[in-house]
Image 1: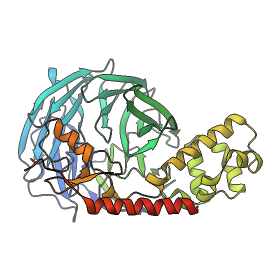
Image 2: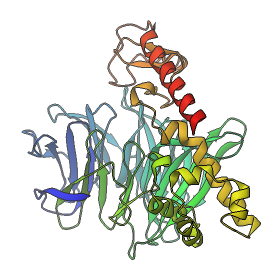
Image 3: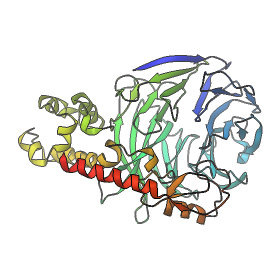
Image 4: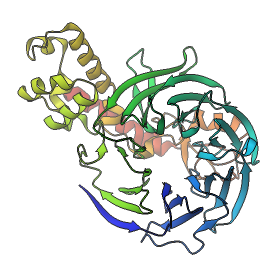
Length: 456
């Protein structure tokens, strides 16, 4: 299911972070360097290692296009590198020169966040390489950061255990004590989920900490409600502090561990983990298999109607319904049976006596049903707008050759963005051409799904 295929042992000190682009793996270390490897054969690129930081490098991340690599260090700077030749593009100095612990690009590459040991957080304009906005948390060092997939908000985690939600104007929207002994890492799933309240759509986020726990949260930015944060569940199982966690790029898997860093590759089934033993391990996994109990923690969502009884049991545990596993197994409830359960069958067939428990189970099943079209049945990726990650209704082709939802791309351009959302390169033209072929393909797919739903 998961096998070790390669070990990188070039760093001379602890490996602090690793990150993938579509063609490269980047690693950084206490030894002050960043190293880059080709994903073709894991050989180090000719211009690696990248040297420029004068103290330990704590974090590194690629821009969405993969053309720029950011790294941050105890030396109080965040550096930008050209991934094609290793040249330094910029050195961004944190206010007051505090050690920078974490850095992240926004999904549209417009901004870069850097968070420091003194609690300061800076939003940099990537195009102008100037400080755009800055702020700070009340207590502790900033050690974790993650952008929501749509880029409307980002979350920071601190050493005192707080999770803080910010909008793209650096306004603090919400603060929550997430982990008693300190947050160590956080990451968003790319898949939007139903919150079960008036059709609200949420993004799922995972956080981990020194309390040996992984917690799942649902976060939404609504015009009327402001920022909504909902605790979903706690994933137990680790007997030591959980130092790193990461969702796969399709949002279907979550990995966590007592390693300094972990990351999934975007296009191939590879996982990288880094450690205080100075090495980086590359793991290969089967994305079609469920990975419970193998170190890859996941709430199974793929093809819900095809879940086995065991996968239903894992889902129950993830929802805090572990006590019902025996009842569901005794009644041979698999994925298809799960989706067909009603309040009547929960009462009379499964004989769940508690009204509150029945209501909770039914609510969770309703949430699964609401996701069947978009997640369980699997929308083809080419039908999703790269900006909103939602099914396109009016696809248009932009000058970069990619297709986008018309309204989303018009909004993108209206904000005076003249670059491609996919490549970050300048658009030669702002003309948007209707993609009628793609629209017809989407309509045919929707008709197929409707017929499927009518027969199940």
